[in-house]
Length: 251
Image 1 (cartoon, rainbow, N blue to C red):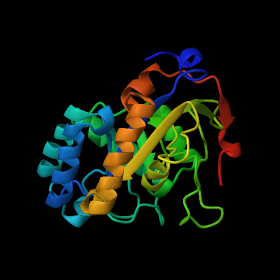
Image 2 (cartoon, rainbow, N blue to C red):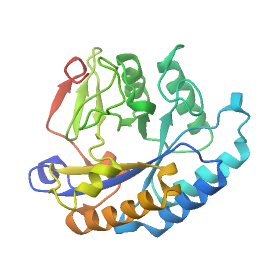
Image 3 (cartoon, helix red, strand yellow):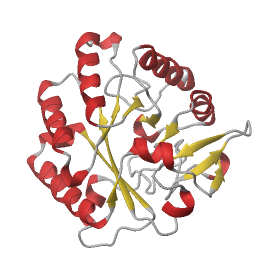
Image 4 (cartoon, rainbow, N blue to C red):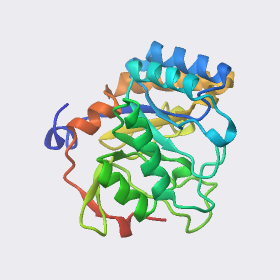
């Protein structure tokens, strides 16, 4: 993977990630696992996965087996849901402490986690400081503003990889998500812009035949237009020249 002076000015790269939110749903998992093995468009799909929720009675042993399987076919990252298994954004508690606890739980089980994406695109300064502590690259920033977020909702905005400077003076590598499934499909008609396209989808999208077909077509087209890499390679090889302050990257 070239460093920034090569990748950003002239490089045209693409990565793909999936927010794996129902890893213990057999129908969802079978479709995601098959897709990851298939590598549509030539992409190693990163699994940004939600850890098992003990309060919901989720089976840790089954979860571990599926997470290890996902890690064999692409990068594995942490996708924190703060409120409940199916409620992503926080409604109380200490979001930063939850991220630390989940990341340490994964690493204690031999997962080499280096990537993070906040559920519901949530990010605040305390969470970002935990990412810096743990050396995690972040994928929570988006090049688009999710329509369901309320005005002023805590989030990050970025259109290309950069470093985010934190109040402590430390920085977090930001690998923003640039294209939703719908935006990926529209890429058939509108040129992909920016040095790195980061397309994402949800594992539950694979239950819908129309959305699944749109994803396959979109990834095939993206793979033909951009050089395929994955989030792990991007995280290890990319050294952005741009830095933005956390205060200037919010709502």
